[in-house]
Length: 303
Image 1 (cartoon, rainbow, N blue to C red):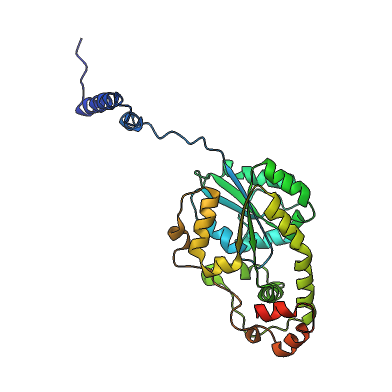
Image 2: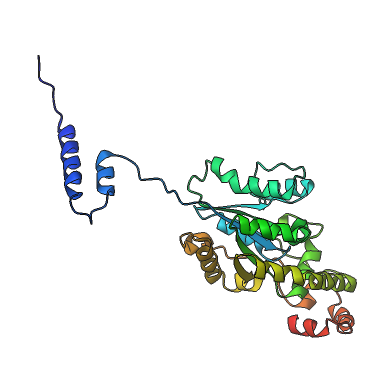
C-alpha cells in the first residue's frame, strides 16, 4: 500500500498546532494562540444586551443623537417607536425612524418596548450589536404611563438618557416652524433645511408652550431621580460640544469610544439660527407682550 503524501502545508499546520499547545504550558499565554492555529474563530461574547431609552421632547437634538449613535457598530437605536401611523410613514421616508418590524398600528407600550429591545437579534446587517434602544417622547405615552414605565425600566435594567433643551424660547420657535414640515427638518448633514425668513409665531404659542413645559417638570424630576441608571444631557451640550457629549454617552452605555468615527465632518447642523428678530416676525412687539407675563425673567435670560 502506498504511503500517504504529506503536503508542506499540512506539515506547517501541524507544527503550528504543536507550538500553540506548547505555549499553553505557560499560564500567561492566551488560549487564542491555539484557536488561531486551528483556524477557529473567536469565542462569541456572552455579554448581555444593554438596553437604553432616550426620553426627550421634539426639537431637542434627539434625532441627531440617535442617527449618530447608529453609526456605532455595537449600537442599534430604533428611533421613535411610538409615533402614530401617519408619522411613522413620514419618519421612515425621511430616515429618522430606524426600525422596520414594529407595526404601524397602536400596540401596548410594553409590547412595543419588548419588541424594540429584541429586534437586533434578527438584524443581520449589524451582527455585533450589544446595545439597543429607542426614543420615547414625553407626549407619546411616557408621561401618561410614568409609574409603570419607571418600574419596567428598572426591572429591565434600562439605561435612561434624559435629553432636554434648556432654551425654551428657541425650542418653541423651532417647534412651531416645523409643525407643518415634519421630516425634512429632522434630516442630518446636507439635507438640513434653512428658513427663508422670520416666521409669524403667535405670542399665544409661546405662552402655551412654556406652560406645558412647566407642567412637565415633575415628570422630568421623577425620571432623573427614580430610574436606576440615568444620564442627563442637554441640547446645548450636544450642539456646543458634541465630542465630549458623545464620549459621555458611549461611556454610559458601556460601548467603545468611537467618537471620531461617529461625528466625522458632519456635526449637528442647526435649522433655526440667528437672533430672535431673524427668526420671529415683529419680534420686539411680541417680546414686549411676553415680558408682561410670568415668564419675563426666563425670556430675558434665554433671548
